[in-house]
Length: 221
Image (tube, rainbow, N blue to C red; front, side, top):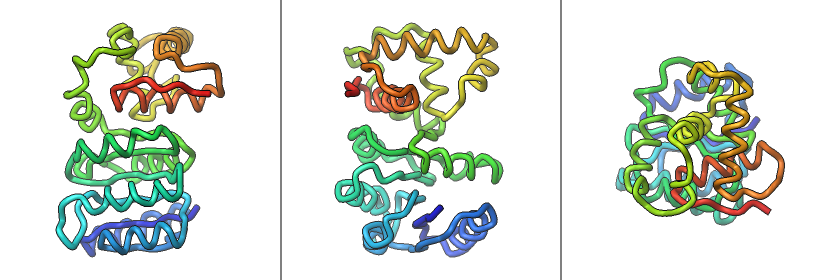
């Protein structure tokens, strides 16, 4: 699996390279600036991009902007954001097109290698891996917005939030102390209330998560 990595801190970048390679990933490119990232993504077209938000030259939002531009030219390019910051505006834009795997982890909340590697693999496979703090910040501005999300019960919103974190049905059941069957029923209700048309459940699962994070339900053909 080929990875393009963008991180401006040398020690962290080298550490991530070694960690990813130790778990069987191939580093197609490891860069430290926004322009280098965009060029690397378009040149190598990796299986997944792992990017920091703030990269030189201005250390503001170059990483996310480069990822967004690359996704416009490579629809569905899987992107895992690894940052100390939650950049709400561009994070929402990243979620808005509803295609490809998406993840957003906070550096100080990645506690072990397995957690990180699992997130990279999940995003590369087209899934989601969202830190709960990122979810909370993204939802602050949409909690009162009218729309299909308001149809969800409190329990269904809990299930959907755990889906956004990347939890499997069994993991959700364990976290909520309910049966796998109850989780499956909640997920079916979520698909119905968000008006997600029949499709592969894995695809609808991602669409439901993106609808939740983006604050608007999207139709799936």
